[in-house]
Length: 300
Image (cartoon, rainbow, N blue to C red; front, side, top):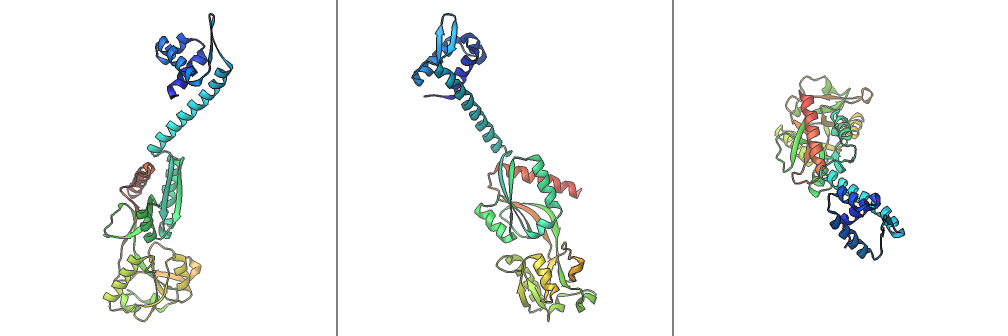
């Protein structure tokens, strides 16, 4: 059976056209090399070398086999290097999720650009998904990691790296009477139509908001479910209701929507990089360490 060493041995002999020099090049004894070439010719079923008193030369079959040897050995070496680079996380693919809020944060382009510079041969496949859908995809294995918002203190069966924070404020039309009130409270929303997160896509935040409203004695009058920030802003601007948006959101001046804090509502959330501890993708460790270093540098 042909083995890689047969190709290397023949390549040395064919290039040197001298068993003594080829044996020294291979750090092999000359008789052992001669036997290996003889076995190779027997396996091939044809002479590869012309043996004459004045030296050796390649047969026509040997010259053709030499070209193939070079190609095969090059491909074997490339395959070895590729496998090693994949194992070291320098080559491959990472599937990364991010939600709307993570996508507009200034940290995201910095993380992605830094990773692309450090590991240009790792393909980053980005997937726009709500936080809950990212969690489902992480559990299902279709995502390697996700940038998402999680309520602070919430237990998780994932590995997490905190990279930012946020909270919630009330979004209302610029000319709404509540904008002129100092210290808006949840009880001020008793007679207001509200736009809330869709419980199918964002159950945790929906449940927390509903709990806080109930604790304040407010029976929520839900006018609409919506999750996309720009959609929510447009609905508020159109007078469809009031909504809760992250404090980091900045409505455009032309939108007619403003954010106001609520005196008795704080629901801090953390922007995190989240991944499964059992994920064996070697490139993931590089992403985590890079994001960790970038986050620590920003906080310093």
